Length: 434
RNA sequence: GCUGCGGUGGUCUAGGGGUUAGGACGGUAGGUUGUGGUCCUGCCAGCCCGGGUUCAAUUCCCGGUCGCGGCCCCA
Image (cartoon, rainbow, N blue to C red; front, side, top):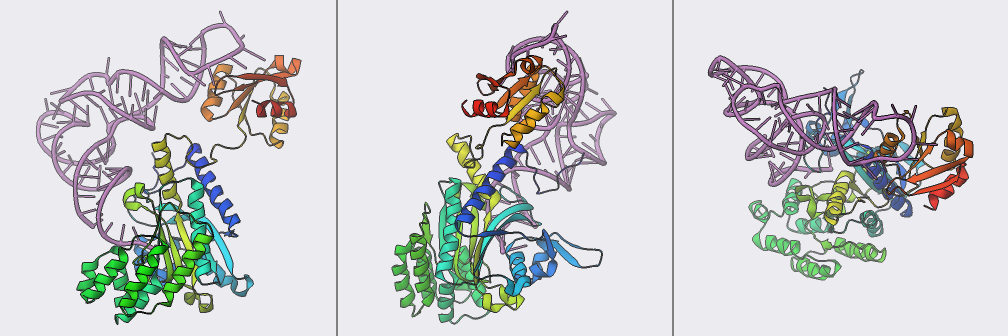
């Protein structure tokens, strides 16, 4: 037999319904935040990603050559493709632009819970308007999605690479040493920091910064620590402004932690950075991450840097919601996944199909979802089939019904029946009053 | 990259060196023909792969593979 490729998944009707509901929910929030959905190809030139992340990434890509020997790869992420798209459009796009996107990404690595070789990201980028207000809009958008999912326990962590840079600068670090120190800080490896040659007083201060553990109110403490190190940081003012805007925009995370040692381990972040964590997911608890970054220099469009965006781990948020629904004993994982008009199963019984098809067509064009029994079998079996499918209503149409012009609608969940005239309007009305 | 646990029909499982490998769910057909998810009957369908030990392996051993966790990593 053939099996799925490693690290990939199939989605049956129930799971797919849930995924569609979540995607729709994300899009509804995006629209409220003024984001416009875009899409880029599933595969790209390999150089796009090696330029962004270095030659080393090739090991983790599904890379291949086409017949003209061009190097291509399935996309491992969506930020670089969106940047590429904007770069190709050059002056055609009104700025600032707010783009959102959703799509599958591919990484060749070991799959585990919450981590697959094919996975989906929902995300956004704001191009052409750097600054605290943009950052607040982006983070607020991410929070709004999280709130809309109904997930109760998650934590927003906010840091600022600019502040870290100011501190590390002041310590005399340059070049690779800065990136190295950021990585160690991101991991909370203070021993490693000291081993890398940073004096112990400074490491102690950095450690205090990492332990502030609180919201915007911790910034004054941070300011004290930072000025005791003799650092003037304009970035700190910007972070303060960003947090104030975030609050004013109504972002209301269940938990907010300002942690100036969050560096996201990436070279291209330059300003505010943030992560959203969900404890119940264990080791793969980060469901969203982003911040302000510089990538347009790769396309010789430095004037558009920095941009601000995030990527949200669609699969992981769903996983977290599934865990929550299970714990709560709730049958609804994603809000609205079961909403909309219920499916009506129409079961022709000993009548020619031509006698029911016009009715089926009328019901469908009126907006009523209709599935048609395509086999002929005992009505009992057909009803069981309709119920197993997830249809909410069933209607048997036989010679008797055609004769009288009356049909019986049955609600499958409890067997309650309603009789009505055999017309689309009457049936719709009967269903909505049941 | 390291590491722990596991693999019996589509799903959940019983079993165990020699069995017609048992059950449940499911799917399908029927129970004399228009209202189900109860019941009865028939049918469908299984020991992850390769090597080893043995007269004999689904069962024991080794390797692989797949799945589930943990660490490392994570654009």
